[in-house]
Length: 481
Image 1: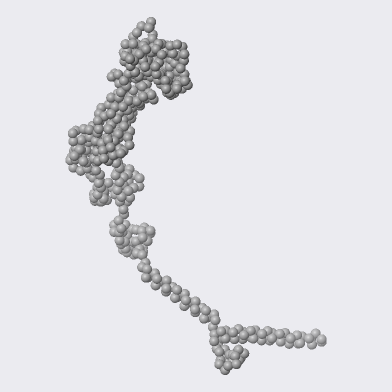
Image 2: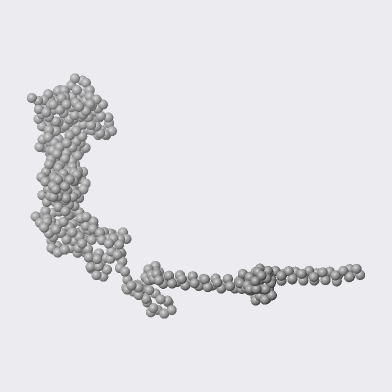
């Protein structure tokens, strides 16, 4: 019965695997069998290789020049396999700008050849058991803790040191909740905790040395989690499940006592969970962001079991933001780095009673606060007491009464009249009524007044006409003479 095997053929630089026994084969036998025995590196001569008859499935990865077209595979009978012929059942083909990964079920035994712009001096590596080896996580970890962890890949138990292999695989760790109903992470989704890199950046010490480094920032909910290391390629993936770990809440506690430092200072106090943290080893590196946007860095390096304290200048009223990074050790002596969540507090300007300063004569009265500082114009307006409602109503009523009095006086002055003659009053009343009662109402008086003015105007007009006639008569004898 044939065994089912999964192989990967990687075209890699020759210098990285000079220790391979197959590389020392004589040139008279350039074809090397890809069988079921583990082979960490097989030299690829003239882009040819041989597949053993016991192979049930093979996965090959060919590295080529950037941007070149996919390779073409030539079977032992001379027929060809193109990337466009991949059906997803017997032939799987994944290509990028730099490599092709091809998986073939029941490949034809015999000599095969790859045609394309394959990197010169390449070798073939057969993968029999790809796995990631990483140190287990501590049994007790904390939310916000930053961890450094290294891992390496093996192929059949032997380390893989090929730099190009980074382009094929991805290495990361995920947390899966145990769904413990007593934990805060009950029902939580899986969380990607870290991605392992071999690029010499971050916490990775040496680039392309085959050692992958993962940096963890455990900013997830506290509870019981199962760490799972994952190695994946476009064709397959591998998982390594670790033992469950308990993630505790962040053990650093921050409080503030406003104006607790005296003289315009706020007292910041930093404490830790004494059950898990060695308080005497705690170091603090932080920064304060003031309400106006200014930032001040500070450090606390005291080595004592006491609460750490730092005085923050009461620079301005508003929101203060504090960000800390804590360094220390656990009770069992493990070093740890903690990213503490941001802490903020609000300060408000106190209400003060205005104090009038009249010590300077001739300069007017100036209002000062309790500290002796002069208030601004807006502050003085804010300091003035509000007018009572009853006073405001009385003021409005008084203004209205004054307007009525003035208006009535003006109307009386305009409509007042001269004393009327008795004969005028009797004449007007005789025309309107036969009664003997004399009506002397204001309307009658007003009507008589206008009538008298009309008569006076007509009389003056007659007098003017009479004078004109007399003047004309005097002039006429002169003209005749």
